[in-house]
Length: 245
Image 1 (cartoon, rainbow, N blue to C red):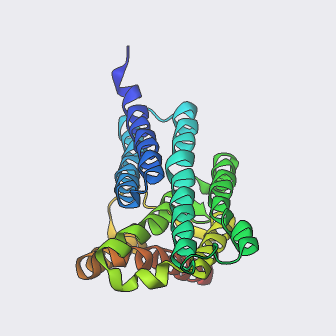
Image 2: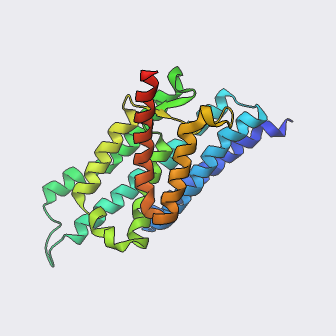
């Protein structure tokens, strides 16, 4: 039996396992642990593809398994995290001895974060059949979206001065709708896939990684949302420069 061909799939299953645990912790109200597990899963998600390319064992099964794992970890988990954050904002705004804000508003908005799971599924299905996305992405990748959303519990814990900004129903619903759209938007984005490690072919990637590292050192978890939007902005700039050339 050729063991090396199973290594990337084993790493992908590690990603899926982290996603399952993240859901369990989210149901228990421990969103911080869910966020850490999503971070670990994102690392595994990077290395399963890397391992497949290095070992030259890429295949259709690995591609499908990766999408299935990503649907759980980077689709369902961020939706559940946003649902719990939104529920928390409603409870925080409930008057003493009163009912939950306006019941009609709660019933309309309470489940809007699950649009993230729906559009993540659409994004992953589209990715699997879109031949344009072999070396880059069109639409925000589900891991990037999940890391953005799962940074919110970490920011609330480590930067409590920003908790009131995040624990706001308008903020959570707006982010849920915006990121759902960006998951399937016709927006070309570069991928962190290195065919070689030379500067000329990877300027945009090295620039992104260096700036991201500086932001993380300076602002810790607060840097994550800025890094995700930096990724989008640099991609737009890269697209404009490529069009001019």
